Length: 221
Image 1 (cartoon, rainbow, N blue to C red):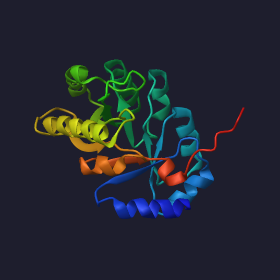
Image 2: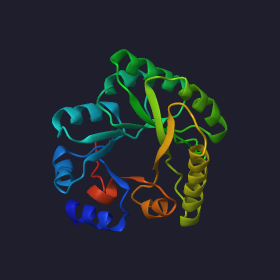
Image 3: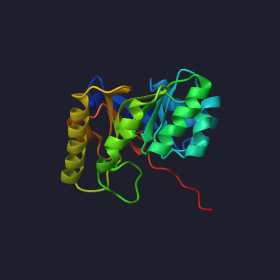
């Protein structure tokens, strides 16, 4: 299938109100342009350097999403370039985002990334540490929390659904409370292999790479 055919298939499967992010890490501008021609305007990158390089060369109406782990020393490079940071997961990173965006007079829209599966190989804050991060978010002026994100461990359909359901419960719980600078608008979860389950558990942002662009052709070095 072509990129266009894959995108059309996915769009026909997802409800209105669900944002499809094309995960474009390691993909060429030519591949991304094929997605752009089908109407895709949201692109997700894992690495700051790659995002910046593509942002300079690609269409200006694109919304860039930083979906990978964000190092504090890289925050200054993305100010004014990123529509949504999906990977806020600790207080020190929050403080750096607040500082850099304050200096530039910009507002950072972020999602709190939760390590719902307590996977040591994945980023994200643990649930037991979430309250402390939220308290610090409330004190910020230039950071606005717009929801939650997760990357779940690889597993069965049953375990996938359980993790997504746990995320939705946290999302719903936070939605019922009134915070400064924090609203629950986006629940970003689900990738190429499990996005249908994620949507059934109320994800409204899905992040798809191989399902759009096909498998990556890694060069043997």
